[in-house]
Length: 554
Image 1 (spheres, rainbow, N blue to C red):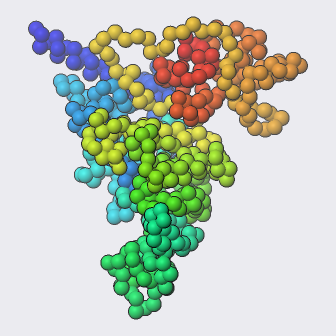
Image 2 (image 1 turned 60 degrees about the horizontal axis):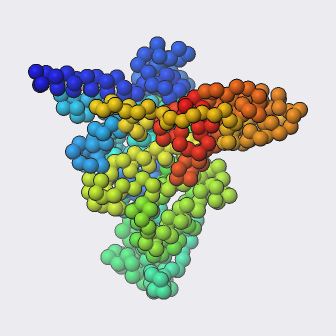
Image 3 (image 1 turned 120 degrees about the horizontal axis):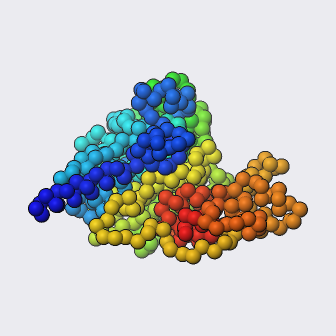
């Protein structure tokens, strides 16, 4: 009897879980659905379907949105998928109720994930310098290399974010491999030869500019002659000469030069884009746009005194070089940088600190030249200690899958905020465990509070027709000039955002405006109340939100 009861309970849990998995959405929204009945004004589907049946009605005339992910090993990804029993793996997190959108099916007897959901609107291809892999719809285990199927990188959740933000097909191109330095491998074009110490107060050396080699030469090294060819094959760091261009480096020194990885990434990306029909099923010459670049890197430079000291200069030049390198392609070409985050907020060593600060300095809110162009994601907040992770390996964030999922979401959020035609109010599949049932009664998912009728204290985006653009405005602006109250309160979203100033009832009314809110980590984001409603338990605690999304946070 007990065994039958247990079997029934497990079956019920699996049934509820399977029914809860948000594998489809009302078209053009982030609301999950099981059928068209749930979507009175649209179809229950992915924002875009790759299947051949969808070609007539899903918009194959829409341009492909391309995102390029570059960097070293943490861009490649070392988030461990299993086993379920190991703390910090993806299967362990899913068993606790997290990431239900990644699950395709669950074994009714064991509760184990049997298959992964497939993101039918997002394609991914990866070139690791040696071979091309993937070229499939995005899912956990998309990389068909046997040693890579057991890991995930930030592309999983980043891909889900981009798929939600567009009702266009999305193509993610990953390039590169681990163990790469911005001061050597990624050194951007227009980088000149320089001299630097190998430690604080240490010996001066000569370091290469783009296209030169070896990686380090003695101070006052001379330009190599023909007789020097192959003389430093086993001497990359103490060579008395240097070669000044790629051809000579290829011929006389190990086929490698400063900036080789930058050039290789560009070559591999362009090969894919120039053969896009091979990677986008049903492509009908509708065109594509490079919407953004993601660069997750920095570990290798933070172990080299000269490279860390030049990182700020090099990262600026790297960003500028992307526009030049890909000028033949259209698109927004926004840039999101993922910082190093080893040990979280426990502190860096001096070289790590220099790299981290250099990365933070290129955010558009700090570097005016990159305003509206570049956002930087501080990855320290996603750090998980080794005790809660599969292994002790700080360089790969202890192989913790939660780190890579959270990082992917943050990279996606940052990219969406930079892109003018991305749907800003779409919330991706939740990272929280709220979609799985609990064996014990739980409190309401919404925080209990007494909602008082107030104007929102948060600034809102308002389209000013006379100026032809959107501006951030407060509720004091709406009611400041008596003669203009009616005009301003009739603008979309203003009256629901500022009911007191506009003289209307606000009982249980969410603001319809897009507003700026500060997350607990200090990040400022622009969102609608629909974003808050996807995780009210956490997001209603953001300052000012309960007086903005009144119904959601009641």
